[in-house]
Image (cartoon, rainbow, N blue to C red; front, side, top):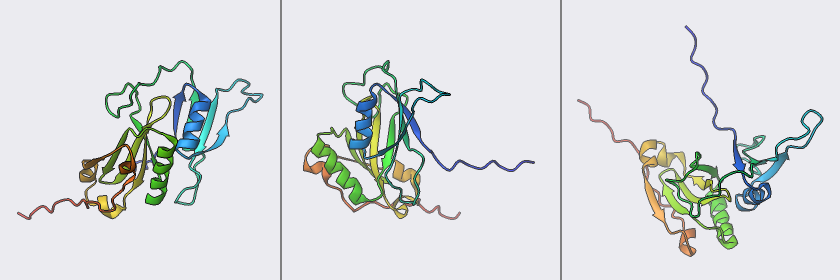
Length: 193
């Protein structure tokens, strides 16, 4: 009998096709806040590499940095993005990509930064395990910017936390208000028979 194979550690990175490398570069650096950590360049063995760049969070609360979190590859033949982004019912295989911020304060500062830059907030939601803002990139991909609530809030009933939603305003000062009062999710005790 063979031992059960080890489970993965998690998602390491995602690679997205984009219409315009420079436009997407500005989104991932100026809007999301990642830094470029690499780019494919011609070599003797690969004289014509695809136009491709690699991005990572500037730091990581765990004290290490992935080689990259997101990569973009230029493909000018992509269809145009939808006129109005919608989380559900869009024509993309990837619904959205979630980017976590290390603290509530860092997340709120990013929301203020985005609002000051005129970035359209597509959806602002408090889930049972995260407080989230959904925006879209220049290609129409959904991007969720979030901070995760403490494990004590959602760890007792992940399914309950996943099904919780509080929809919040997406414009004005109201879109920047964040309550620290969160419901706590625990599974109901099953009575003994």
